[in-house]
Image (cartoon, rainbow, N blue to C red; front, side, top):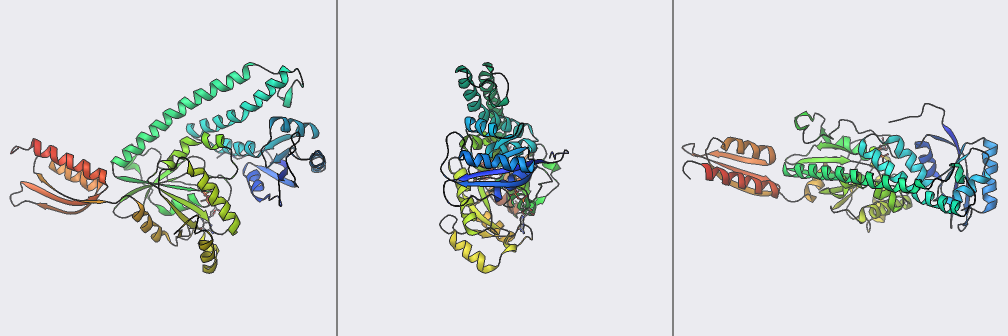
Length: 442
Ligand SMILES: Nc1nc2c(ncn2[C@@H]2O[C@H](COP(=O)(O)OP(=O)(O)OP(=O)(O)O)[C@@H](O)[C@H]2O)c(=O)[nH]1
Ligand SMILES: [Mg+2]
């Protein structure tokens, strides 16, 4: 994690809503997560102005607030078009930056990106953010207006081409990474692991839950097939603490479960931004089961909105069944939980109530995970005793839940009874078949 060593930048927040009252709690948290100190906020309820986004008078009010507080940045919790950014910037004191909601989120992601995959995804999102702005600059320059648009220097006609070329190179590299990840998921499934992913709004408690679910911090034995197993999953009361993915072995009896924690969701993200993080979100989209973590301590309408955002983000690509997990039950009383469960019943039927912090409800959650995962199959295999038989028996021990092992009277055969994923049953059958084919009596 990169923290700024320099004193935090000072910011004024601006936000426009079409109706009702503008809520600034989340954008303040986002600004703080990006390392800004928020001094003031200025809000407006009106329709969007094409030139300034806000009304021109409101922009003047923002400029006056900036001057009075000596702020160095204006953070607008809306999407600003390139021309709007330019026009608002022109009204502000010299050198004050204008940052919209997406730019802000990209700044946070940029600070958190540690792995090659995360860095590529952030760069892809930045380039996709920049492309329409470079196009706008180009069209302004073509009309020979406003040279040096947005203070970014001379118009350079190769800029757009460069961005497009870079986007396509990053896409190629990310696709390769996705193929490798997919291959690893297949390998894990073949070795009998069920893949469970944690999803949910940012700050819902996913990383805290991962630590509760993880039994096995010592992952050396499987390092080759699990290079991303990690013994830390940072939790903090801050938005977007987690950006990449962390996978750990879960503590469930009989079945081997790998639990993956990943980047949180947030509302009002444009499609291209979500799409830029596809390689990371694949851990969720391609899991066997998704646990959708919800912070139950928040007011009902906020919970509702956040669950809808999560469903929207999952909707297009997710393949796995979803179990809703109402987290932080230690902060609310039983009556409130009952009320909130009822309020959510259409969106999230039959949720599991837990506290990732105290561990309350974790046993119930495991039971539910067990129920939702594909059924284990029962199998009874009789194998001839050859020099390879014991290694097959030991393979079955590693990949299945073995009930009994019996040796024939003359130690010429062995019978194993076990339960396992359908795929493991298939594989053990074919291993047993090979033993039959190579046995001397065949
Ligand atoms: N009271 C209470 N606090 C919790 C619980 N679970 C998590 N928290 C707190 O909620 C905050 C966020 O927790 P994280 O685990 O970092 O949340 P996350 O979903 O991983 O967040 P991001 O990675 O930022 O998206 C931290 O301050 C946790 O200590 C819980 O069950 N009860
Ligand atoms: Mg996290």
